[in-house]
Image 1: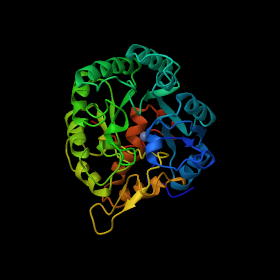
Image 2: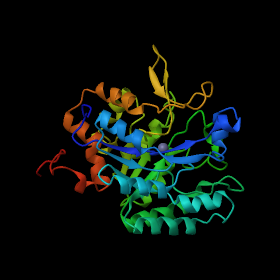
Image 3: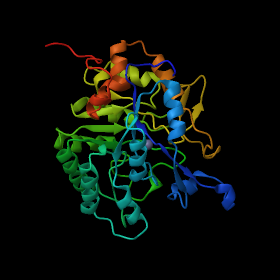
Image 4: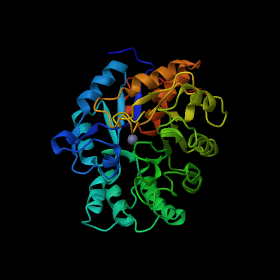
Length: 348
Ligand SMILES: [Zn+2]
């Protein structure tokens, strides 16, 4: 076991499933454009052995599993059942979404919510994420009014089950950002400020801004609006794992954000390598490189992210909140903790 950076470390954004494309066998030149077209014919497999190796190496106690595209909630359920002390999962109605993608059924937010409701009723899932279900093939771009109506129905399900909802922010260069799927460019995927409408309408539902406005790249375009939402609503948390040290510094000193609203989540398993830009700011960052193509190796995101945390001159009690204390509370992991009173708490 490696040296743990905190008392109970929870990584809140993990993909324990991986795609096998077999590019070589199919005689296809590997590139991101093919992946962005919906990962045709890829085989999904349980990648938890590599995940458990990294958890042991870096002292990560638990992971919150979620599905990127093509992955299934059902396989995550199996992985959780195999290691209930190591994993919990959130859901995103993947079996329904696969049927819509294959054209077997038409998109309906009602059906998507019915499936979320069913999944959450099993008690197997702790929240909704990383994406809120949306029409994968809309005939015209979504307007925010339309999308907000859908999101409200998803929020009602979350409210009923008292679980968290992931609000996805940021894009990656390899997947070509906004055009990844039609209708995504002008909705919540690109405009974190839209979360104000959602957070204000559902103040009793915990919202996690996935990737904290920064899912990759050197630009801070999504970071500032995302922080602005978090500073305005007590129910909004920021996921931090792909931030470089200075981004933490800024929110930690914001009296309306601070360590209490941060959860560490690195997109482990998303295959986003680091790019090196010495002499610039930041001197390294996570993003895909179309020139290099998709990585075959298991990218070591925790090594990079924990190095950023090492640069922070903060109190260990605050570090413990970021690395696990806040996550233990919002994902209801109290029964997994070895003791009570491990995290900052004062008699008042
Ligand atoms: Zn992800």
